[in-house]
Image (cartoon, rainbow, N blue to C red; front, side, top):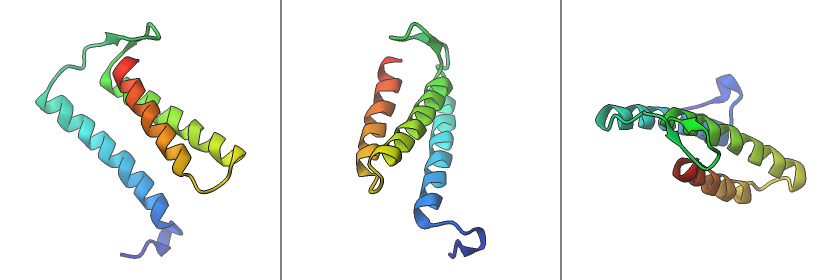
Length: 93
């Protein structure tokens, strides 16, 4: 499959596929284990699973942008930091 028609690279496609899979996974998780009731976390915010997904995606975007600004490529360090951040958001926020 060629992505040249949109001038995308494979990493860009993988990024958007990852976001799509995260949204689908959240939908399946909510279908089989309803529990979207708000939960109060360490920041004293009432958040649902969807809120935590949004917070983790937004924060990860800033982590990657900061990494690019400070260190440039490769982005493996930013990926590790973002995964730890995402886990922390879902665990404690």
